[in-house]
Image 1 (cartoon, rainbow, N blue to C red):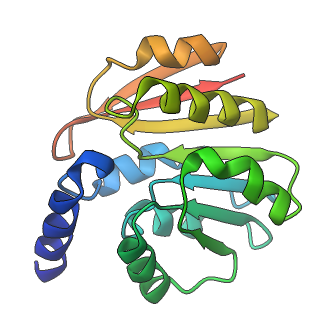
Image 2: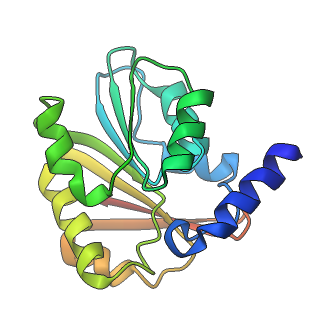
Image 3: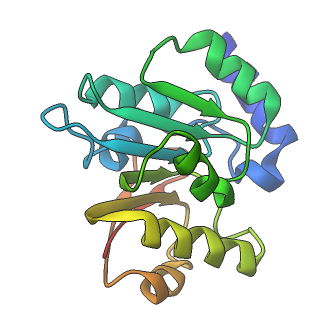
Length: 185
């Protein structure tokens, strides 16, 4: 309960950029991490790592040789994540998701297999939203998947502008109920 209250307080102070008051439920984590597999080495990117709720779900499913680049804008969230999640496959990046190309080059990675996003695309400036989606699409491998959790279907048109195939599912066992978008090239 103490962690729940601590997280709620931290998220509420940053609601304009986190887009949430609560961490996602285990049901959302299970749905959004579906493309992560322990059978194959993958390059996985997480946008909006927060305190690591989804991050831990990704790491639990990842292949031992996979790598996870976890982007988070808020320095204090990065510090919590680095303290609470110890895994050599994880790279915590205190920067914008728009900077993905620079970090792929830094880590000598050419493409991404899975992008898992919890950033609030519906409240970001439209130009930034389109840049993140455009770059995500461009950097995905041919069979790559972009997963996004949002709290409405308002962004459906934005996803369809960038991805050939866009599906979605609702997750009612979350506060608030969530929509998981699954986007592929």
